[in-house]
Length: 406
Image (tube, rainbow, N blue to C red; front, side, top):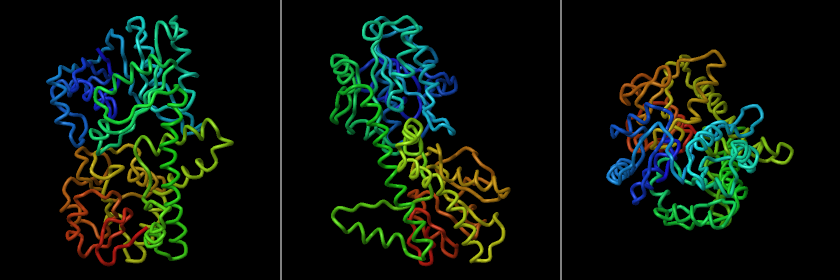
């Protein structure tokens, strides 16, 4: 049996995928509410293809529990935030999970850490926990790092088709875990050492963060001198070796907005480009807030209550609000002792912020200026509803004449 620890955005799909491919799986989470919902057949977040995968896993016999199981394989998929002062990874949740595993695991058990960590985290934090508990690594317990490589909105497809990395102390254990993931993964699975696996995952997300920051910095430069950043990027991308991304209102989610900080925290004197890139991305919600002020002045809008933010999630067509640029913008506005902005997101059903709407028509009726923070399919397909409104489009998805860009 496989015990998957942590049933969030990564752990749950992984557990379901394993169970739907014939493996005996128990999914464990310390959140009793999550466990009870899953036992009742209720998914805890929306994701394309997840209901079907859930049904297949239930038919495959998956069990949900708040208790750690006595078995020989554990997959730990718990949050790994970063300390906002030191920028270093905060491994407390992984450490707690490993401690709990050690209380029940069978001799020779394999503990697979799926949570994203900075290079060296296993050596600095996990190995000492195991050794201090009286276990010999490589005999009593085997350690593996198998970072996930999927994105909300396309999780099920990417779990099946993306390549994966397995980091292990020995080739034998690495191959054993590779066989486990190969039960469903159709991509190439590479076996390497643990520290390399830790580094590759962080580097992948850092590469993306730096490229996003370049586009965002271009937007600021072009705005300063009255140039069209989108036209410039379009022409530059006609070069066969240039592929510049489009700028946006900020970076959200639990990967690109977090993981690169691990390198800044561990290598502050070396990760200078990464540091500046992350500061650029983190500064975009403030940049958008200033653009809102500018557009309001240009159109003689004096009441924030006549301004609406479309989109609360961090990316289009998902319900994931982690590190959302919209939430960051609202926090920034609150620090300036101002509020009143209206908010609407078709994917967010629960109330998360003040002045949040759950009906698009009512939202649009009550505002004069709409700020597109997320390019959900809904707003792309129903642009006609925005006729007569002032539009600030931070995602470059609205084609109506007069639309204002970053």
